[in-house]
Length: 263
Ligand code: PLP
Image (cartoon, rainbow, N blue to C red; front, side, top):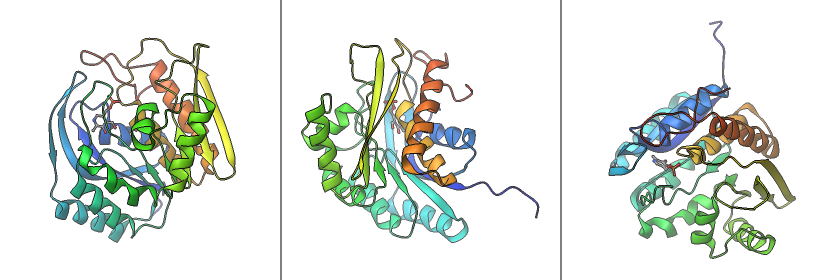
């Protein structure tokens, strides 16, 4: 066979019927970044750019069977874990990740920008096993505060929140600044590892649709890790990519989404 062999990246996440976030955003992102994207579907939302109206979680047998099928056939180079919805799914994903010896990007999705609850609050404790397996965790400020009790919007809050994730077993944490008003026209994302901190700065974009931006960023990191980038390089490429998809946001539905056609 003379076919190309793109690196295989896997998203373990939830479907967004509107196409802006979730598995749909992940697969579009992975494709744009030259990775071959596969998916383990954990749940399906009935959703558009206004709200999530229903969430249906798959039985854990169905989640495990998808992992087995992927592991049986593909050389998975990176995994992105997104919205998991409920505790049995979190436990099944933690079990199944043991079979994969590759980087894991964990987006701890709790609540949507529009305010929909995306993880049953009872499932938060089950995340401990996932932190332990993560190459990088990518919380926004609200998620970091809910999980760690520290708001990462000033240097001491960032140090405390980052320390919490590293103590929980993650190799690194990317504290996202997209929802933080710094008052200086910039957005800063901070990647914290045991070796130190890297800051990534972009212009703040006013009044753009952000639906799907967190999914896009975490799957872009996974796609670049699948290509073999070191983590800081992967995060730099992924933040640039996400900024471009926000800058050229798509006017779809009532509220728009990040634009996966933008270059
Ligand atoms: N729906 C699904 C399936 C998601 O995975 C996410 C975020 O990860 C969302 C909705 C929320 O997206 P946003 O907060 O960008 O609107």
